Image (cartoon, rainbow, N blue to C red; front, side, top):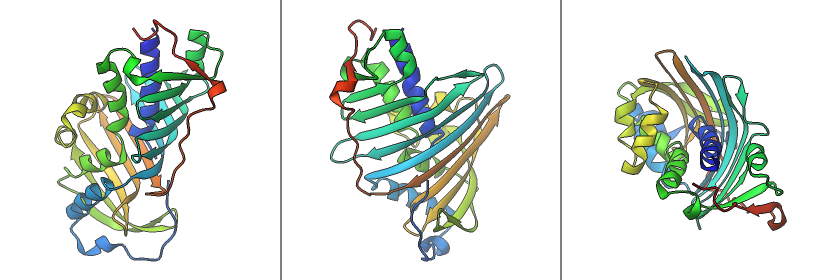
Length: 275
């Protein structure tokens, strides 16, 4: 029971990325991509994102499903890759079909340890501390852990920009300011299967599941003079299901401070709850 609820909490948080992201500081520089073909700009952006060591993303995702009804996920994430992988993910709103995640969720990941703060989990477990420490190596079987982390990874900055490089119809749609930063707006679609194949092999199955209700996904991306995206929107529909996501990015390569919760607010994962 715990593992299922824990997975849902992480998935809700991860969905904030899938659907995830805010803008950077102002500049008067003209976008350097003006002389490049739109497809080249996407390839350039995908390469640039692999060099990013930290960023902040705010996300809003609206979904609908013919059986489950309408849903929404809204949250933000601070991410760093160096000196170790760490992220601080806050989900303010998560719900579908009238079922909400009371109090939202927060997950702090530092290396191989996650700290989870979800009101519903605390009630189920009878926890007396607001945070639960989860050594990922002990969080059920390893496949379950990899799946949870995969849900986060496949909607991170690098993965999303890599998927849109499969577009065959991307075109420039003008110059616009996003959060005070001059950008060039590009618009197009990408085929889901081809996009998924751009991801690492261990992430592809989960990506297919997350995008299973969609066929071709429409995207709009706003790229600044440094070659990095400041805003990305995704939308798609199939057989009555829809997805509309807005991700906004800022703070590229800026110092971040992701700290574990205070020790006196953290409880251990109860024995026997990971199966």
